[in-house]
Every structure is written in structure tokens, then in C-alpha cells.
Image 1: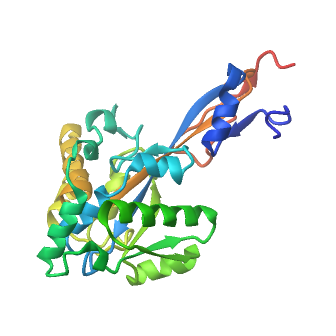
Image 2: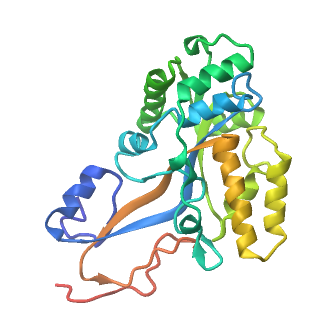
Image 3: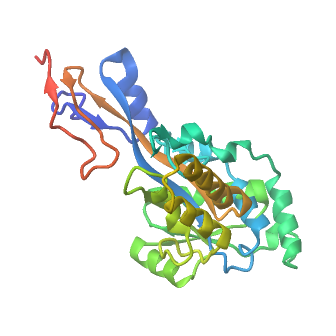
Length: 292
């Protein structure tokens, strides 16, 4: 490895194994870099099953997000129990400090919810009779790990036999736009340091997430937040909107926040990792002290 041999001075790590190796002996400085990005599952609300709120709630609660990070993310990243990622600001405060991750407080039996939802739509209440597919935008090994994770966890927690369709990103994106999918996943990275960059994308006709969900109350909350400078009012609007997305309507199921460790030689100083910038690393103020 170039970093361990001293040929490069700083490196980001993508697996927990390498993180543990580089932590040994406290030889290097480590910082956790957080990007304003949340990965999430979304449901086609035109689908016979996912038109039902309880069924969406069952799938959202039907997997352990920490297990997802451990198995699919190889221990890198942070399990997401809300929509907006850590460090995102609202005024002078972190949004997550004002609004704790709301999914952590939800206690429900996902399989019970699923069966109740199946009965509500007049379908066979046996989850094994469901015909559900997950569209994975990728065909590499990482995509296979994602598909296997959802197959296994939904079989164990919900009793369904999930089918996974693997496609290259461009083809998968085209199918999603056309509505030819049941459920899929993607990630969203914020464009600026305010919760609005994560919430207005779900307004009716925003055209960002093609899940065909529309809600007048949600639209009103976001328009209200757009039309006021009162940060307390905006905070409450976003809190209610997030609850709708994740709990009341279960339009999406968050997976993980993009967070990873970066190791550097101890003589490297002043390197910055700005959240909203054209580059992920700012070297302008970097310098070295005691380099041999």
C-alpha cells in the first residue's frame, strides 16, 4: 500500500478492515469526513402493493440499517435513521441537534404491518405470495451484495421472496423514470447547507424522485418553509415534513449517511474537508511540521 510505505501522505479508507489496520499503534492522524449525502430506498407508489402506506412502512422497518452498513458498506458509513444527514445546518444550529433521528423512536412489528396492509388492498395476506422486485442500479460485486442483503433480510423479517433485477445505471434510471419498477435505491447529495436541499425534491412535480407520490400537506409545509425567515417555524415545518416522508407515509427508507475515515501522516497539518465545495479536500492551507 502506497500510504503505509510512505509514498503518499493522506488516504481515505473504504473498508473497516483497513480502518482497523491503520488505527493500530496510533501511527497516523484520523479524521471522519462527512459528506452531505443520504442513501435511501424508495417505493413506486403506483405499484399495487406500495400504494398502501402500511406495506411501505413494513418494508421501511423490515431491515436493520446498522446491519446494512456492516454488511454492504463493510463497516464504512453511518446508519441513517432520518433523512437529512448530520452537520447540515439550519440557521446557526445543526438540524440533527434540534431534531433527533425520528425513526429511532418508532417501535412496530413490520410483518404485522405488512399483513394488515395486504388485507387493506384485498390481496392474499400471505407475504410469500407477493410478487415484489427490487431494481439495483449496478451489476458489480457491490450491487450483488446489496441485492443479496435485501433478499435475505426481507425473507427473514417479512417472509417475502424478493426478486432482484440488476441493470447498469443508465438503463435502471430509464426504467425508474418510466415507472417500470417496484422499489429501488439511490443517494442524494445536498447542494447547499440548509435542509431545504433535502426536502423540496419531494414536492409535487419536483421531478427529482420518480416515485409518483404527491401530498398537498407536504407541499404546503415546504412552501411555508420557503416563504419565511423565521428559523423556528422552518424547523417545525421540516420536522413535520421529515416525519411524513419516513414514518406517516413511509415514502422512503433511509439507508446510510456518507461518512468515512481519512488517515494522514502526523506531520500533515491544515488540510480541510469542506462539506459544500467543488472539491472534497482543500489543500490551500495545508503545511507540514517535522517531516523527515
